[in-house]
Image 1 (cartoon, rainbow, N blue to C red):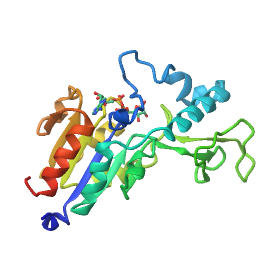
Image 2 (image 1 turned 120 degrees about the vertical axis):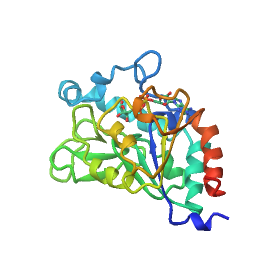
Image 3 (image 1 turned 180 degrees about the vertical axis):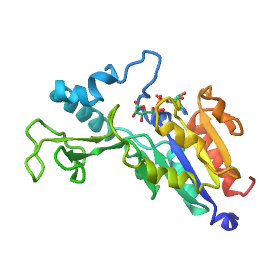
Length: 236
Ligand code: APR
């Protein structure tokens, strides 16, 4: 069972809906706010310039919350798929729930909540393990630390690496993303012509680009275990 699939490359492109059932809020919910904040007040370089204390507090709260939640059945299903397939996760999420579920190849397009980054040298990263970043916390070169997250208006340094993964996908699973934020959303449309493509979302995004996708309109925690089962059994 499944061993004949071992060379097939599955790429999962995940967004905030992936972690919703773990208790983390999505970005574009009904109120348009992210945890009671407008994104431009907490997730832009301008916000950091204007009020770094607010930005740090916001991400410190998100990081603390991370340690109160657990991976859900959807994360676990993608981790289990590694038994039968080569699996690459490309996530827009800054949480670490894919890793904690056991996925071994996780590329974070928008950074990682649990890392601090030097404001002098983007290559200087520091594990936080849940600790807060405070004003005055400095890197070894003496500059203020900031969250290792990609804010609106900033470059997405991992984009090329992510594109290279999607371009070699035999199976692409787009899960829990509204596909409204670019350049990340472009990745959904970059699988090779022969790839099998799936969308898993509570509300399938209304995008002409999703023609040719097998759409599963359901919660990730329900739909992914089923889809992974089908892939592992070689039914598709
Ligand atoms: N299962 C599957 N999908 C779900 C679930 C669920 N349990 N709950 C919500 N969804 C879907 C929603 O229907 C929506 O399509 O998840 C999607 C979440 O969309 P967004 O909130 O826009 O999140 P995302 O696409 O990840 O946002 C992209 O925007 O704010 C920035 O950098 C941030 O990475 C983020 C980026």
